[in-house]
Length: 158
Image 1 (tube, rainbow, N blue to C red):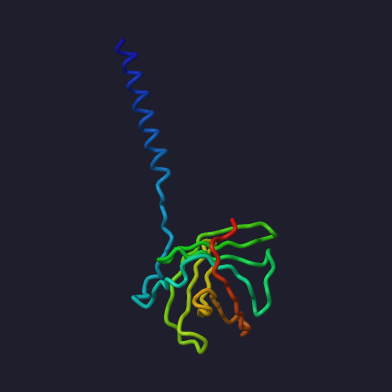
Image 2: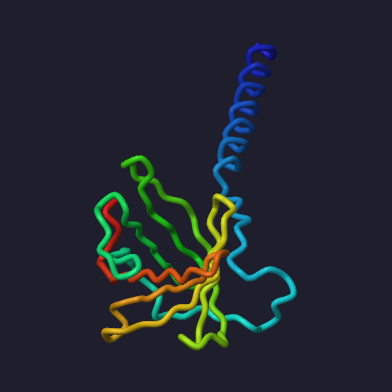
């Protein structure tokens, strides 16, 4: 009788230990850097005019097609998600961002984007059309100026 009680108690303890291991495995261990790298001090901010979902509608004044478009979803506080197509298949990845004052001749602001894939971008940005149109502009390594036009939409399609 004692052996049966001991085995029942042992099984209950093992089940409890296994459950706690499973539950702690679900804890969000989000180490994503939503803030700028160390050393930036207070020279950054999160522009709440960016909050929401933006769809790429033009690249260098030319309209983009369905599979050439992408979407940026800014949640606020440096959190976001980037949606894009690759070989006509939809993908998305986490995105971090922060804004800074810029000394560009185009605008007073720049945005720094860091993608989960490891790539990063720094671009000048500004708004038109009562903050419903977002312009991003940067210079490539060979000096070419690229300008993207994003339009605010209700949500990303996937």
